[in-house]
Image (cartoon, rainbow, N blue to C red; front, side):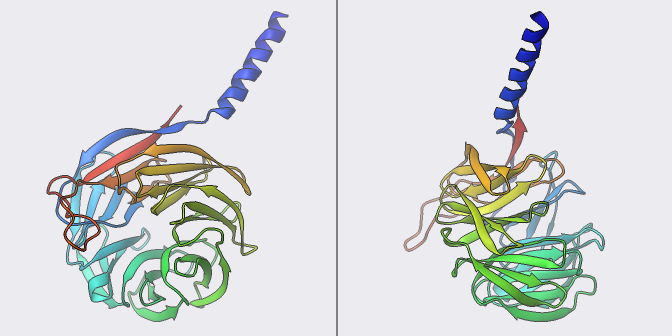
Length: 335
């Protein structure tokens, strides 16, 4: 009987553990300061760094200490960053002059500037093709660049306004088309659009993450929904509720958690029970407007930025960033 009771207790403990996965908690806060707004936070897991777009430059921050390692200067309207670890090159969109800036990822020195298109925003490196794809919102296109030579290949029409994109690592790249509520599939070697499908009932998809094991895409939509697409079948397979005003997202294959950072002051953690079944595991409170997020696939940490704002000017959406208030927050999973 004692042995049976012990076995039963162990079984119950295992079941409870399975039902109570680790949740995320704020573990570190680093005040980075600096002037200007911000956009994408892009991790460089191999070097434990973050590249944070800050309007006129990229801030390069040590993930472990919050220390500012340096800045990539001369960017006019900084938005996205992509890193090619093999070549040591970095790529940043410079939206105000419709270009992509190539820089040395070690020294942060600007090496070259490539013409792109209007509203150059997010940017992604595709390892199989060695190419870089900028997502040009108002131009409804993607600028394709040879990541090893820095040469412009072409501007590829996408048939709508792109937001974020991800590489599947198999010669295909997927991008959200926010004004059409669609996803487009791009053949990275041919630099052509090969498929597209609707994200309905998810409207205005913005953030995008990928699960290459189960061939799933996670589109965070401004309508308060995460759409999970089967990218082999080219259709939405499931949905889950998230906060309003999403901008950043991610997916952790180790824990099967997908993430959405929202401007309404929430960070939604959605757990993948199976490829087509999901539930909200956790809703984390964050400062209002904290919709930029990065997920490090090596450390499994979440990084979110925020700041305090001054009075909203007439006709504006929000006030200026108050000096010295720009802050990096680190969230880690704990049992």
